[in-house]
Length: 118
Image (cartoon, rainbow, N blue to C red):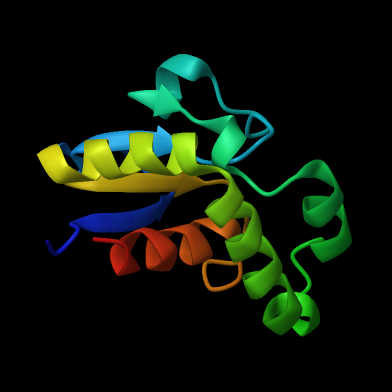
């Protein structure tokens, strides 16, 4: 089944085409109220471990190492992955992240990981 999974910065305005909006960061985004986030869920357990997040630090030079390390954490986190796959099977799933870098963040890895699963 093709997964309809998108990623979007949590600070960007919500859109009716977002479907189910899920924050996938471990920490709450700075300066954003819960009402303004317009979330359906916050699945902080799907985010990289605190150790991995701190090591990566959104440094593009560490991206190539970060991806397989985070994917290994995802493979071990079967319950949270299963919950997101169930949401993705119902309607579009939009994974929300707070990072400034739209190309090097955990939502990019998570989206690709979920799309590869059947």
